[in-house]
Amino acid sequence: MVPGQESLGKRRFQLESPGTLAGMCSLPEYREPLRRVAVTGGTHGNEMCGVYLARNWLQDPGELRRPSFSAMPVLANPAATAVCRRYIDRDLNRTLTLTFLGSKATPDDMYEVKRARELNQLLGPKGTGQAFDFILDLHNTTANTGVCLISEASQSSFNLHLCHYLQLQNPGLPCRLVQFEPSEAETYSVDSVSKNGISLELGPQPQGVLRADLFSRMRALVAAILDFIELFNQGKDFPAFEMDIYKILGKVDFPRATGGDLAGTVHPQLQDHDFEPLRPGEPIFKLFSGEDVLYEGDSIVYPVFVNEAAYYEKHVAFLKSEKIRVSVPALPGLTPSST
Image (tube, rainbow, N blue to C red; front, side):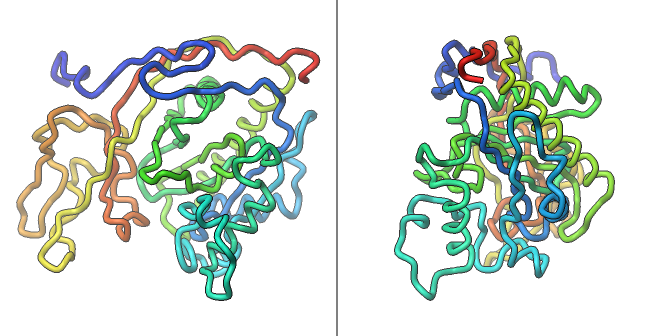
């Protein structure tokens, strides 16, 4: 790394009490225990860790039980899981918008729109006090992300404390938090139905493949997340800390030929280097002609979901993010009356 260059792609913010990330967003805090928790798998029907964990827990949910709550397992997209496809008609994880949920049902509705309304009735209604307190949505990626949590920027610092807890529990296993602002006016993911939620991504794993190591790792991570919620419900204090998060800046498409077909693919120097700094002038694509395409930005960025198989249809070769250092205030324990 060139001395002094890191500051170009890394910013620092103070997350101040009672929960504002200076210059970014308001982060409301929970002051009540989380009683209604759901763990959803199979939102994408070919991401096999979540699929088979959900199926297992639907048969025997015992390991999802904690003294103060019991998480409900949900197979989010049963039709897509039955045929081992990402979705039937459209991406379910882009369909939980108030526009779709509030539209009048018709016989011609796409399957995922119908399923979105069913999930909204089961776990919501979205945006109401009757919605579940927390949804943990399980995903696999073909990209080399390792353990990755995805949270909307508007969510509370509870999610930051959750990520930090996982980091402390697994010091040898990097756990990164990706923060994003939906490009549309509405939130659309499965976990957006609840009052708060988070997605757990684990990779790399090919679509339609179940790897024993990642299956066991995701199972252990879910257990640790539920343990964190239990500690919160029991009134534990969580001290202040600092951590790096990755804020999504935008997407980068593949180089394309006339007519829209690919003209090249991800460069070997970028492949499998998720969350590593990408500097201006470094190669990002290798054209089929043999030429390199260089990154032309004016600052360091951190690529995420590099060469993700499911993103080819979305014209995304990778997402650009910036690394931000945040100072997170303590999460005080709940009062006895709350718990």
